[in-house]
Length: 80
Image (cartoon, rainbow, N blue to C red; front, side, top):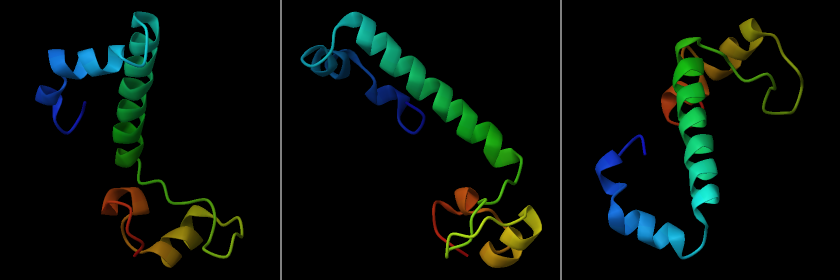
């Protein structure tokens, strides 16, 4: 939906209908749309992971030291 909206065409919906009814397709699309929006918004806030690689709860300052200058989410999932 976000990366290739042109791919969400009649054939895409036809395949969805093989597995889901109309209400489920709307629910799924809404869930995906909200999550894309949330992740886009949160990415602008420069949040860092709450946990260190060893599982300790850490402050944003310590997390920034651990993970680098850009949060993991802004690096495409790669750790700094």
